[in-house]
Image 1: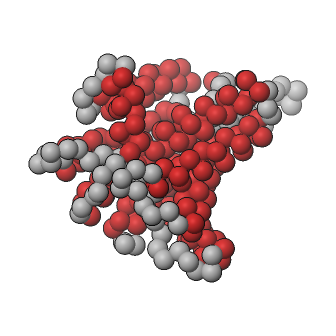
Image 2: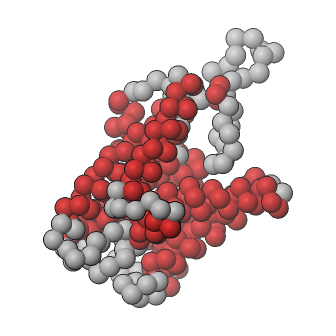
Image 3: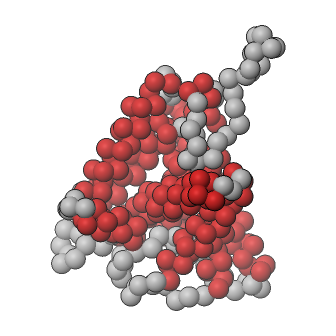
Length: 272
């Protein structure tokens, strides 16, 4: 929308890179703009948190040790070093931070439109299917069809029996791996490149995204229950990591988290 006064500055600005502040007047009340905000991202990601934590309690009820998503375990270990222990500690921290961000952003008076949340789930499903086929096709061309099947993106810290358990972990991977690799790692590397090394915005984000995608792929091949290291599957996860970085930048955390989660759910439920 153009301002009524041609000499007045427009209230709309171009999308910002994660880590840089968004002025309160920068959000238009459109689907694309609203669903990229922290408010919508937090609210649409909340079911992932609740479903994963509830599912994790159920699948671990009769186990001598808990099966959790790797990123969940890593953050819990960090929180335990700070004195916050218990399986629900991380969920509580994530929930508290999300509520704080939600309340802070309410000053922008963003309208909450239920149909937009349904649209975000549909959009994430489309992205999950589209990226799976595009990236698997690309890897197939690069390696002469060497990719036997599309791999799950979630990294787990135990041998995982049962499809039900994998479905629960798929939800957790979407939430916690996006939190670790997109928000904390890529966002942190971007801020470091900008503030410590004075890099330009685009160069800083591209560098952070490449490093983040490499590490995102690499963690699936570390630990006692790691996948066997194969270049086609490593390349697939690296390219998918780059795609999720782009989604996080352009569409926000909520879309990236649900795309990741629904992709893993589709692999476990239909493609494996």
